[in-house]
Image (cartoon, rainbow over all chains, first blue to last red):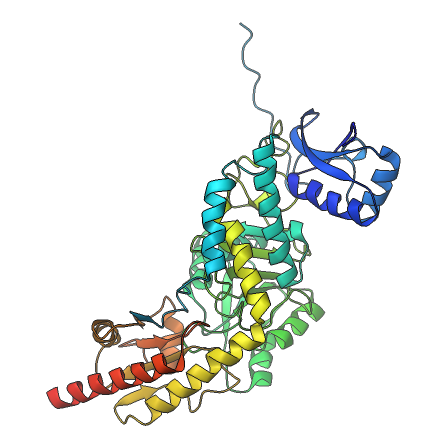
Length: 89
Length: 382
């Protein structure tokens, strides 16, 4: 499998993406990505150009990680306060 | 023991479900959706395959198909997720405590009010009863697909149409009907809560919450989901939003095998088989003067569930005597006291006959004879 990793939101979404891409003749596999802006997630690994892959997935309502607004909080509820930072040692 | 308590949980399970559970415990031993190593990804893939099967069964998207510990948990998630302060709910007069107790709890904590729509032999009348009770504060209609005591099938399609026109969330408790009665999202049905271990022939400890995504649900439980780990807020997307912590992985995988089993046989043929057994049992009970039945006939109005009583015996005593005779049936109130009030068994409860795809006509005939013996002994004692 290729070297392009496209982060998505979850394993379930990544797995669905693999199926959608397979239907478009594109091979992809699920992979874990752990160092993104919001921490652990899963994405897809593919040899195809990200722009092509993301366009196909966008048509199915799946937005690629690096382009997604990715709201980390529930938009229906007020954002809770951030916990205090631990003291420096 | 000849088992006729399938409304509580189906037994036996199909060999393929047992094999899937065993294989899952041996092969899919890593935590799915957490690590990136091969074993975790393989396990996650097996869970996803089961999720896809469940989703297709109910006409949902895989991401909107959430594995739950049971139908009660799914109902709590749906009911408490959608209702807000002082909102109103319409439900039926034959609901299970899995619907009633969350509503009762919310009436105390959030000022939620609820109205009971009377169910009748006339589906149009039942639907009209639901519609009549909807008011401007009504947030949801919640009802069972089929009563777990009476077996009565509710006009879910008609009620769904009413809810769709009024923009009200319609939650269906499919604990009794899933696997024998047709039920899918759409036509006004927004959320289906199902037991994995009844008509879907999965193991106990499994259930499903299936949604069309129209109504955003608040969470009951927050925790680790394997996604967005740096964020303290629970993810907003499904299924992660409602699958905090490690799911019943082997259970979910073998539930997929159960759905395969039902799909291969078809719900129509399973229903036909169970209805034949029910017709035979009903006819056998009708011939016994000291047996009380609670409908005039068993027909297409009913799911394969028949409540009955023997003489003046309390329901628990009768079911205990049947157990001594080698038959497993549940006697009592079945966690659905209002349904017993409706059929007039609020004092003694009822014994419940509920066959599965694995029961046979000779078993039903044997049960009929056993009931006759118990009835005769009871009459002699009297």
